[in-house]
Image (cartoon, rainbow, N blue to C red; front, top):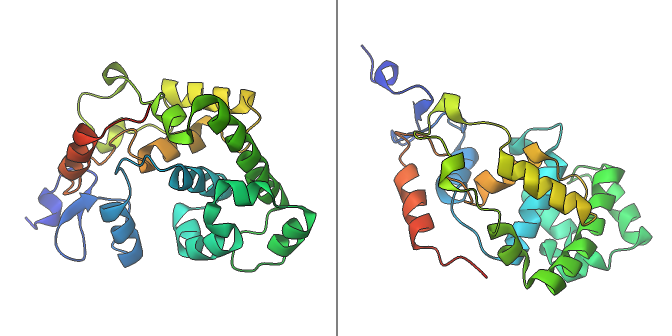
Length: 213
C-alpha cells in the first residue's frame, strides 16, 4: 500500500511531503496560502475588509483565480484601505473597468466601494470591523466534533446571521456562502481537517488570540 493511499480522506501530501488539506492540489502558491494564511485568526480591519471584498469578487470563480490576481487588486483598490476606497468615484470605476489585472465586473467593483462606505459606518457604531466580525465567532455547539472532509459545510447558522446583518447594514455580495468562506480564511473557524499539518498551529493561534472588543 502506498503512503498516499493510507492517508485519511481529504489529506494529501504536499510538495514538501507534509500532510495537508486536499484543496491546494500541490500548487506552490496555494500551499503557501493554505500554510501561512488560511485559518489563522485575523483582527486587522484592513485585512478583514480586503478578504470580504475579494470573496465577493470570487463569486462564480475559483479562489485560486483571485489569489493569483491579489496583488493587482491591492494596487487597484488602494491596498484596501477602507477610507481610501470609500472615496472612489465614477472616474475610479472607469479606471477599474479598464484594469485587465483584476476581475472587471461593474457590480462587484461598485459593491466594493459601497462596502467601504458601509464599513466606515460600521466602525463608527461598533468600534472596529474586527470587533464586529468577531462577535460572530460560532459557538462550540455549532462546530462538528471532528473536522473531516465530509463535515465541512458551505454555510453555517452563524454565517447566515452575519450575512443577514451585513445586508441589513447595506453591504452587498455578502451571501452566507461568501461569508462562511471569509470566516474560514480569517480564522473565525478552524476548518483545517484532522491530519492536516496546519490544524494544530491554527488552533493554537486561536486559543491564544485576544478577541477584539
